[in-house]
Length: 159
Image 1 (cartoon, one colour):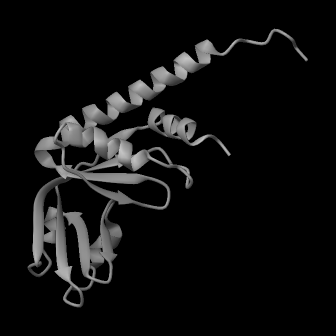
Image 2 (cartoon, helix red, strand yellow):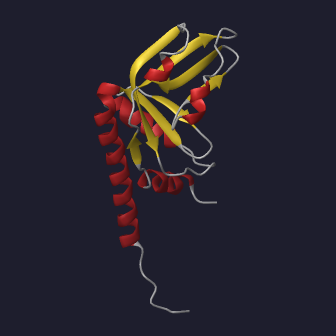
């Protein structure tokens, strides 16, 4: 098993943030009051329905969200940043590192994890700053990896 810090640096070095094209909305319905998922959700490039014991949450393109009944809570003007690189299931500290760096720059986020990668939901006005922070983390991690490679003595012994 790879050391946790090394695994984290590798994951940060592989960060490949991609801003999704559309504006998104976050809708929250009290438990039992949510509408069925719209059929159009199946054709979407990104969308989510999350049912938990307290509420049902949708993350949808705003134009699709507008087709649903009024929600108990609604936040519009959001963008989704897809973190393209796949993440190992035993990775520790990735989300806290990213959220901490974004918090230092006053960028609010909603983190949505999937089976192998994460998505950040940020206010439309904040996505350029969020991308800059993520790329800065990536570049710093790559620099650490380069320095550790340079510091490792090469073994000239072929055996």
